[in-house]
Length: 294
Image (cartoon, rainbow, N blue to C red; front, side, top):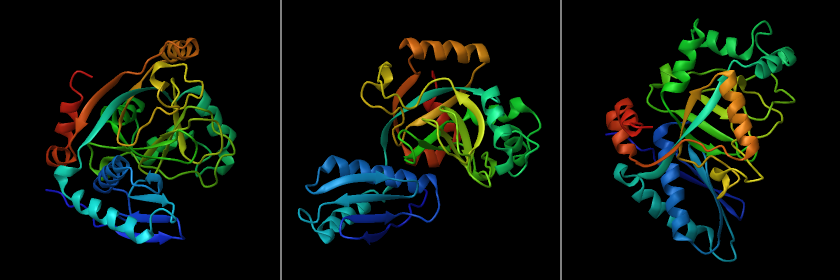
C-alpha cells in the first residue's frame, strides 16, 4: 500500500483556488492531481473556467459571480476525499513512442554556441549529463533513457511543452541533471532536454535551460494538424500519458522527418487503462506488462 498525500487549499485572489498536494514531485502526488482534475472536468460545474493539473498540485479558475469560492472548495474537498483512495486513481491513457536521435550534430552545435552559460564549457550537454550520472558508455546512457517510459506529469511553459517523469525506476537511479547556469536565448524546435529528473521536448524554438541530449524526429506541437495524430489537438501530449523514447539513427531520423513533411507519419500508440495502485504494488514489472506487444 502507498500513501497518498493530503491536499492543502489556498485562495488566489477572487478567481483562483490552488490545491497543493505535496511540496515536491512524486508519482503519488501526480496521479492524485490527474485523477482529481479529470473528475472535476467530468462534473462540468457551472462557473468553473479552467482546470490546470501540475506536477504535485492543480489550479482552478472560476467565475465568482456564478459559484462562490467556498461552494467550489466544498466540491474540491469532496473529490479530494474520493481520490485519496488508491483504487479511485485509475486512468485511461496512451503509451506513445517518441523517436529520438541522441547526441546529434544540432544539439552539439547549441552546446558549443551557449557554452559561456554552462557549468562545464569543455563538454557538450550530452557529455555533461553522462558525466553527472556516472556513465562512461553512450549506449548505456541511452538504454536507461529509453527502457522505461516517462509519465506526462504536466504541460505548460510553451504551447505543447510536456514534463516527463520516468516510471519503473527508484529516484536514485533516475537520470538527473542541473539546468544551465544561465538560460540559452535559443533552443531548436524538437530538441530533447533534461532538467532535474524531468525530460522535456521543446515544441517550438525559443529560450531554455535544460541540457540538450538529442532531437525528436517528430513534432510534439503541430499547428497545421496535417498529421493524423494531431487531428483532435495541436498537442501530442496528454497529462497522464506515457512516452516511451526510442533511439533512432541519422538515416531513420531523416526518413521520419520526410514522412512528417509529407503528412504521412503516424506515431506508434497503444491505448490502455493504468492502475496506480497496481503500479506501486508491482513497480517495474507492471510497466513491462503494460508494454507487452508495444
